[in-house]
Amino acid sequence: MLDFLTSDLQKAEDHLRNEFAKLQVGRANPALVEGVMVSAYGSIQPLKNVASVSIMDAQTISIQPWDKTLIRDIDRAITEANLGLNPQNNGESIMIKIPTLTEERRKDLVKLAKKLSEEGKVVIRNIRADAMKKIKNAETSKEIGEDIAKGYETELQKKIDKEMEKIEEILVKKEVDIMKV
Image (tube, rainbow, N blue to C red):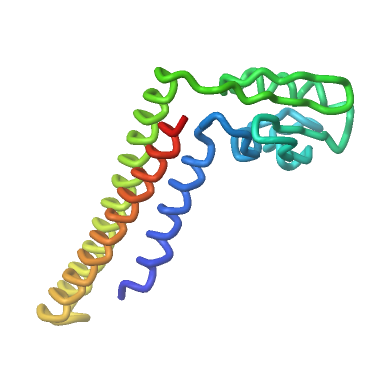
């Protein structure tokens, strides 16, 4: 009955981890730019579909377009994404120096991380609500008895509580990572 639960909770957790990876913490990370949408060949697609994104050193991201004619489009897309990054186009590739973070910017990033984790918790609460509806419907349609329904509800709450703790742990780790100078 709760088979779908584990995969749905894992998807929510993975999404939060991906969003956290995009937060700029003063170190180069391909996730900062891989999802930037670039206009290429008449369609809009993620940067990682049109270029190779790599790390040159702790502060520098290198972007090598597979088709050099896209370099201006990539440059423009990164600038327009408002990531606080300043791409340097040398005609062959794009270099992005990651600026060191100020204390104020670190605090803003912590606020954003808290907001993202709260959104993750909302997703998990929605998953719980959907599961509770399935349990109630099964009980109402006499597919399962009241005792079995209560057992499912207890099991569901345990899994939800465990996932909420994981999200809190992920947030605490990210806060420490952001505030580390």
